[in-house]
Image (tube, rainbow, N blue to C red):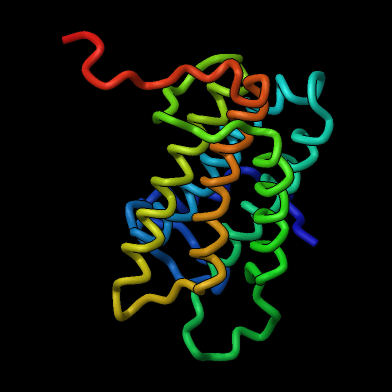
Length: 193
């Protein structure tokens, strides 16, 4: 159980932050940027949920589960696998979490008409916030794949799959809250030439 007694510790005043292991990293470190952007994704989902809580309990429940899983993902990224026994069971994203997001995508996607163009962000406020969350999730994914490409770092394959699915889910959820796609604003290539 997480217990936070003090909000400020002053340990980060030197521009570093602590990983779960206690190791210190600069706050601009790629790993810190990756899990910080995962946290940002969850915060934007929270903005979307302001609208879905009253209008769509099913999608709101899906979003709540994703928000919780994003904290798991942040913990996973904040506890790099060094090959040494950390003395505790690190929290890791597992295949079941990826499968659950895929199942949620499938449920929502069944209701949507196939797309004939790219979707512009917007429509209902919840959809606009979900599109924003999707772009933040894609940024988190870019940071995570960059981190995984560094031979001195580790990122679990399930963590990479999870963030990829989350961005797909957020796209489908945005369309779903936009009257199952009827309220989507579609890109018209070259329309304003």
